[in-house]
Length: 581
Image (cartoon, rainbow, N blue to C red; front, side):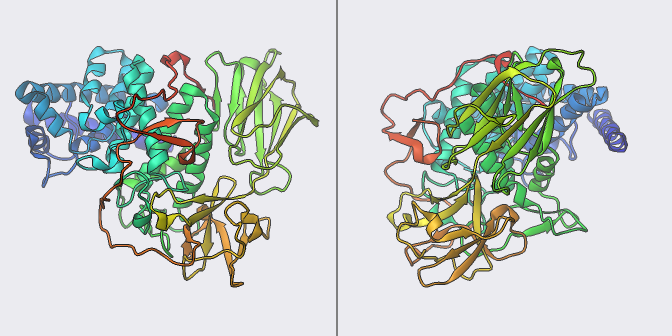
């Protein structure tokens, strides 16, 4: 109640600010910390600086926060304010178009505008006002979406290939597809995700260096301290979540697991007790430390997205089918879910990755208000793609279902209070080469344990030659787990020993993620903010899925060839899977 009361006070102050701007200039719906002249300059096609760098980006944050407060806390004032802001936005955008047409408007869209399309589509979902749909459609930067619609990966060739500029745009495309069924929006979303995970991503599931994308599969020379902005991981998880709700693909749930565990969970300093401390970038190259920053010193964008990320860790554990007769268990996290229609709840007690004989235990309980409803539904338990050992699922002690990695085990039955499902998917060690086409990086490796990236800690070099020549296919030949606390030891060819722990657990230690296993390290040219690469013969590749894996499962085609299907499933909003909490 205290948090909601404080939020309501803030929303009331927003109302007062909007009224003050209205009193000064005579038009309604303007809510912003600076004078409208910042928008006047931007909408004239000359950018917003030096007054304010990204006006629409900030406007999106304000509108999204107000809409969320209406959606989750029922604030009618917040709803009124965001609708008035949409009217103002519609007015200035249409005025810009009437003045300079699409030539002017597309220049405006070259300045980062956050998820303006996404928030306006979400508002339309509440209001069903066609004006909100129309103005959401206006936020479409052709320079970004047109190549994707044609099946091309031009991410590095954008005028400003800033990752977190464009990730929120894709979230808007995904929402447009869900609300309108427009197949182009769906295709753009799928092609983008395929391109990103195939050509631009690290072992963590994250992407970008210096906040920007480089050429396809050109990651090696840009490994360093400026990898993987935290905001981008927050947004790519949203995209994966949308795509999962269209297809219920376990591969997307695998991606969500890896990206969350390696690119979000370890981005808060759990040893800092006096002040929330986050990282803006996640260094992945060289021997490095996490660059912690405290929230009382500054509060950049990643502090906001990480704060939200840690407040919604229950996000995407469970989903249900549109008919509510199938429950998907995607993540193995201590949690519970109520199936109110069937009068039961399911409770997970997870020992994921720690226990030597149990991944999770699921117990069925009756809800007090169940009215003796018959609990006849299907539980689908994700079998991770990283599983290489024999997995097992039991119901009340009896083995059931076929355990095939990269799929679901389906358990259809009439559930009774006291039913117990036990799941064991034993993690194992495996190697993941750096996604780079240069031959000098073909021995640059990350080492994984199940979905976890392992980091060598307290090291002085990232050159590490394992003691066995078969290490790529048999990392267990030189890495051993030596405790129940997820600690490992790696032995080099010269007998040197290296302590390894999950990257998410690195706090203050010096660490390395990618290792040069051939005994030497390629020369790396210095680079600064938003570095550009020179590319290679596979520029503008069309990416198509063979089996739904990550980059190792992609085939490349000549851009002039006909684009193959990317497996988009036409749907309407009512047909998508819904999160169940």
